[in-house]
Each structure stands twice: as C-alpha cells, then as structure tokens.
Image (tube, rainbow, N blue to C red; front, side, top):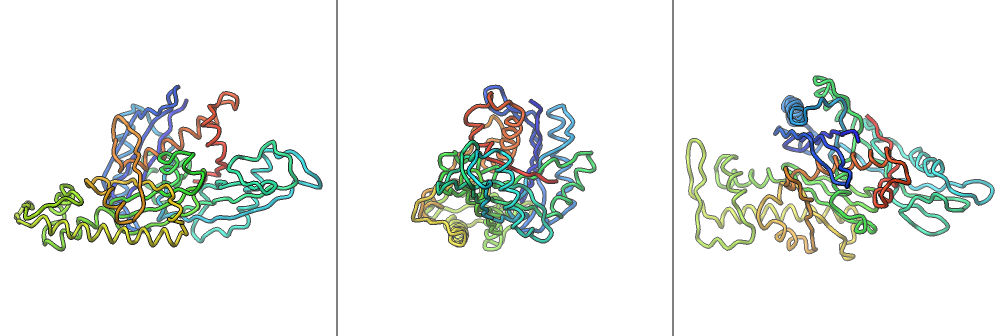
Amino acid sequence: MKPAAILDIGSSKVVCLSGSVLDKGGIVVHGAGVSGCDGYLEDTFLDKQSLHDAIVDAVQKAEQESHTRIRDIALTVPASFSKLVLSDMTMTLGDRARVVDPADVDRLIELSFRKVETPSGHVLMHSTPVFFLVDGVSSSELPQGVVTEEISGLIAHMFVREDYIETIQNALDDLGIEISMCISAALGEATMLIPEEERVRPAVLIDVGYRQTDICVIENAALTGIASIPMGGYQFASDLAFGLEVTQQSAEQAKRRFVFSLDYGDKTEILRSETASKRVENRTIAYIIEARANDLASHIREELDRMQVNLESRPIVYLSGGGLLMMRGSLDFLKKALGFPIKRDMPWTPRLSSPNYCSAFGALNFVLRANRTEERPEQQQKPDEKNFFQKLKDFFTK
C-alpha cells in the first residue's frame, strides 16, 4: 500500500509523519519530523514566519528519515480554524418502496449540504453522517440494501478557513508539496482514541495543548460538537512566572517538576535562570498551578454545558494532549475538579509515545485506514474496517 504523509499543526509545534499500514493491520512510521514554533492562540497565528520555518523543518526531517520525497500531504485542521454545522435531511426514493443503494446515501448527504449556508471565508472539509433514520429506526449503519420509501439522516458538515489552508500551502510551496486533503484534527484523534462501541452514544474528547484546549463531542463516526478554550500548558507556566517573578523558562521547569495533590509541607525549591536564582515554597507553586487547573476545569464544564452534553448520563470522556497530561497527577486532579470519570488511552508507539502526539497519530491512522479501505475490494475488507470507514462519506477539499 502506498505510504501517506500528514502534517499536524499544533499551538506550539509542527509534526510531520510518513507511514503505511502493515499486513496485520498495524501502522509503521517511516519518517517523523517535529519542530517547535510560535503556533496559534484561538484563531490567530502568533508568528507566520516561525510557523513557515517549522513546517519546512518538520517535513524535511520526515523525508530524510524515510528516504522518500513527499509529494502530497494530508493537513490537520485545529478546532479554532474550523466550523461544524449539523443538518438533517429527509429524501423520498420514489412513488413506491425500493432498495436503497449507495447513490441514494450520497444524494442524501448532498441535499443536506445544500441546506447549509457555508460560513464566510470557509470551504467544506468533509461531510459525515451521524446517523440514519429508516422507517422510524435510527442506526449508524449505512441503509444500503434496505427496502423503504424514504430515508432520513443527520449529517455533520465540517468547514475549514480558507486563509488557514493558504498559510500552510504557502510554506509547502517551497518544498513542492501539495495539500491532498484536510482532516479535522479532533475527528482523527477521537476516532483513534475512543473505541467504536463507546461512540454509540455521544463521547467526549478533551485535548489540552500548550496554548489551547479543544473539546469535541463525537457520536458514531462524526463530530456533533466542537469548542476551543484559549488556555493550556503555557498559561500554567505564565502564571508561575508572573506570580513568582521568575523567567518563563524557570517557571516551565517548575511546572514540569510539579506533582498534583502532593503534600509538600514546608519544602522549598530553587528556580534558576541564566542570570539569577530564587528560592520559593512548593506550596506557593501548588497554589498557583491548582488555581489555574481549577479555572480550566470550570471553563471545560461551561463548554460542555453549552454543547448540551448531559453529564448526568455519565458519557465516556477521554483526555489527551501534552499541556496537562505531562504533569504528574493531573488526570486524577481533573477528574475531581470536573466531577466525572475521565480516561486516557494513548496507543503505545515505539517512538513519540506521548499524549502530545495524539493528534498527529490520529490523523495518520485516519488517512491510512481510509485509503486502505478504498484500495481493497469490498469482499477482502476486514469487518471492523468496513464497519467504520464505509460510514464516512467524506468530501475532502484543498
């Protein structure tokens, strides 16, 4: 199978992965490139030149390691640069009942899209069915082969900002690389981390990055809610730098050493920089970090309420991203602060095995599995691949 390459744009780094699918279903990474940069906050790039240089550097590293030239690449789209619109549609098949065929499903999705007003400055990224309704029965399965008079469905249409694509393409032009498709970073990550059986009812993914926290609600194989909070690991260190009057670098080091809910007593710590050092009480560090963590938890609950997530139904919730999970004890702290159980389940990888690479691996997994399903004849597809990926009627755009 032809290898695929993805480019993941984060709030503090760029990741490029090149890989392929093994015969037994696993994924092998042929090349990886990671480059730090001044990424984005909310929907604004902080330094486009820094981003440009990081993209070129990450792609070249992946090419050098894989010993291959990347000609086209799949681009992830962060929540800040995307919009989600849900649209339902009912379509009559004719004067009498007949068998539903794939063209009918495509037509239903197309009609659903026509009802939607494209957000200003955006283009369609992909359209994914949430569920179908046939003769009063709701199902995530494609209603192909069913005999009925009409079909209905709820379709999730994901849009990407045009200037986001233009900014990334400008950097890739220097390398002679074309963007082949755009993928919602949240969708790729959620479908990798959250098992399909847990997505039968809405599940939640919370990705706490360096400068931003993205929240998505996923049902079956589609996103039904997405939100961003301009808060992440950077803000923890920034609070420490301001409150303790130390450099950002010293504060970042103290953040990384911190352990949530640990009784530090009267212990102190020396924070060093290139020009000075300062002794501070560990309980002061704990007070600042835990205050920011509680603030983040409060914002997460507000967004979940806004997206009408029924927390009383105990939805499956996963946590990813390096902004919080890289801090020891953070998962248990956030569970208590939010008041509901949270899972973390980053699949093991021989390299880059860290929650801050979930988004990149999610995108690579998504592209490779989808490509494999398209290339293999239907009768040769494994049941799990067919069940998931044939639900995705995606219209990818550059």
